[in-house]
Each structure stands twice: as C-alpha cells, then as structure tokens.
Image (cartoon, rainbow, N blue to C red; front, side):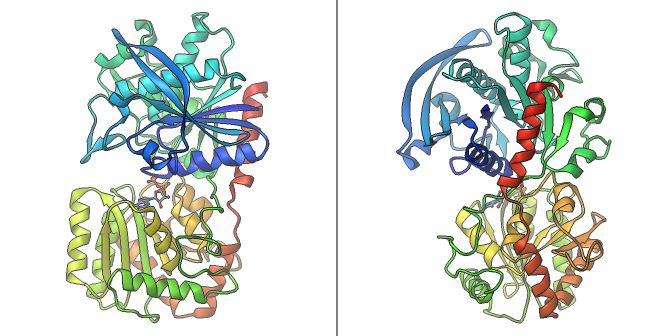
Length: 485
Ligand code: ADP
C-alpha cells in the first residue's frame, strides 16, 4: 500500500505531545511491514540545523491562500527504502520560536499556516511518483484536508483522489477560527456548512475532517466510546454517533527501540525485569540530580506532562499536599510546563517540602527517559485521556502507573481488582483529590510489599504494546477503506 501521513508534529523533529511520537512510530512500523510510507510535516525553526542530513527536494510549489497565493519548497529525508519524510519549508509561517503558540498565546495566523500546510500536503499527494492510496491526517491542523480533497473530487479537478483517514488524538483541541477566515480555504461559499467545517457559525478545522474524512479513528477503544457521549464529546457527540460505524479506536503503541531499559543511551544503568538493581541505581542518580535525599526506603512518584486540568494536575497538587501534611514519607518529581497557576503551585509545594518534592519546569526528552527509569510509581490522574503514552512507557520501565480509569489509561493498565494475576497498576475512578489520595495510599502499601511490587513490575515489563502489533489494526482499517468492506 502507498500511504501518506500528514502531521503538524513529528518526533524527533518537533513535539508538544503524544501526536509526534505516534505518527513517527506508526510510520516506521508500517514501512517495516512492507508499505511505502511518506510522512509530511512543517519545517519548523532549527530542524535543518539539528538534522543536516535533510536534502532539498528541488521542488517548489505555489498554492492559493485566500485572495493571494503562497509559495513553499519541499525538503526530504529518506529514512529507509520505504520511509520518506517530507518537510514543508515556508519560513514566514514555520520559522518561528513555537509550533502553535508562544508564551501560551496562539499565533493569530494559525488558520492560514495550517491551511497552507494542508494544501502543500495535497500538492505532494498529487505529484508523488506513486500517489498514495490513503492520506492519513492527524488532529485539527490537518482537519481541512479531507474537505479539500472531497471538493477536488466533486469539482472534477481530481476525479479519483486518495481515501482519507482522520485520527483524533484529542477531541478537545479543534482549531476554532472566526468565519471570516473561511476564504483561506479557497472553496465555494456553499461548502461552509454544518456537514463540513462550520460549527455554530464559526470555522472549525477538526469538524471539517470529522464530517468529511472517509474513516475516523481515535487512539484507544474506550476513548472511541467516550467521545460519542456528551461528557467527552466536546459538542460533537451527535456527529460522532452518526459516524459511529466509521469510527475505530486503536490503542497507540510504543517504539521499543527508543523506549527500553537495556540499550538506552539516556540511562546510566541498564536493567530488565530479571535484573532490577539498575533501576534502583537510576533512582539514586535522579534523586541526586533533583537534590532529593538518596533514599531507597521511600517511594519515588513521578509525573511528566503538560500542566493542564485535563491531566488532573490540580488534583495531584491537592493530594500531594494532603499526604505530606499527614507525614507520608514519599518523594515526588515533576517535569512539565503549561498553566502558570499550576506551575507556581508545584514550585511552591517544592519550596515548602524540599526534602520530598522537586520540580523542573520545561520540556526535556532526555530527562523524561531518566525519570521513567528512576521512579517507582508514575502518576496520570487525567480527567480524560485519549490514549496516554507515559503509562505505556512506565509499564516497560517497571514503573507502576497510577491512573484514573479513563480512555486509553483504562484500556492499557490492569488493576488488581480486575485481575490479581495480571495486575500492572493502580486505578481510581472519581476525578477527585480524595480518590487520588486513596490510590497514593495503596501505592505506599504496595511499596511495603516487595514481592507484590515485583509481581506488578514484572507483569508491566512483559506487556507488549509494540507498534508491530498495533499497526496491523491500521492496515486492516486501510484495507476496509480502500475496498469498501
Ligand atoms: P499528550 O499528547 O496529551 O500531551 P501523551 O501522554 O499522549 O499526552 O504524550 C505526551 C508525550 O509528551 C509523552 O511522550 C511525554 O513523555 C512527553 N512529554 C510531555 N511533557 C513533557 C516534558 N515536559 N518534557 C519531556 N517530555 C514530555
């Protein structure tokens, strides 16, 4: 099969969250399985300097954008015979300090930036020597692409375009813009309607794809069910229910070449399920790095995430404060950035409890690996979580995940109440600090029972969330989309 993935983030070139990891790893797995895979992504600032192996493709193009037109150029990286990454170079749009925003403020021309990107991806799709059979788009920045393709087909400009698949990585981010931005699509006015990109009078990028892609997927089976309900549907539950039979939940996988504990350049001490001494050594390294007391006798909890209410960061702040006030002996490290109030809340907690809490505000992929390897427990108290990747990394790293039973967290972690034999983590249900505190206490209990803790760790470390396995579900879906079964 010939496949083109269109994504606004791609690991290791650009990343704000799980989307970047998913597309990179899925693309690699599909190529490995014998498909011809092309990935296209914007050429953001700094990528060429960090990856001098990128080659100009000597391919310039111009696309209409509203009343004017904008030119760009493709760069290329041939990763393997079947995997090519294309970068869209348009310095005015993409040579910026941030991806979508700076200092938490969205770029005001995001509609133009990502419509341009969608149009550039279509130039590629149309003119690749072997055109893709499927164009697979991801999240709101690429939501308009299925609409542009449907129009190309309807107008006769492209009688037999590729089929489209849209993956929803997070329904809460939709790309809302004023209706006055619609002309940037260069489609007839009658295409701005409720079965397309119009939502409550505004332009909604994700809705264009939700309405007009040939198939929809999201990143876990449970989130696929959840988004068809008012609680998680962000206003689109009706639309999603109508398309329920075209919506598939496929759990994300892990690229174990990058996320492993035995051959990992980021880790000082290698370890595996049979030899956990290296994990204890990594814990001491991290305690030293964060200025915490070097203690084996207290559990080390960790969290790496965007600091938002989605991730339950506020619940965690309250639960940690309570536990520390009650004298629970524990350590906690946080790596993350986001909401300013949450950031200062965690910093203040660390200042009040320097022996127990350490916080690093920022984005640091290498440190994320060291934290995963060092921690005893990993906290994901999310209010909703389409898939979540860190619980999957944690399982492989022998770091017991403590998760709220929602979305992909529920699908990938086994609580002792579900199966004592297969238990890998601790789940709680209510999105409250009290429920999380209760889960933290269970973790303390588990830490005091080394054999039981070893059992959880062992189960987690042998669980298989490889992309080799998960990518087969995408291949099946592509076959269905192509052959209409
Ligand atoms: P989301 O995409 O909603 O942010 P996911 O759990 O799906 O959440 O993916 C988040 C990814 O981003 C993980 O690979 C995680 O390790 C990484 N990540 C998040 N915040 C940071 C950070 N501050 N530093 C390094 N990596 C981070």
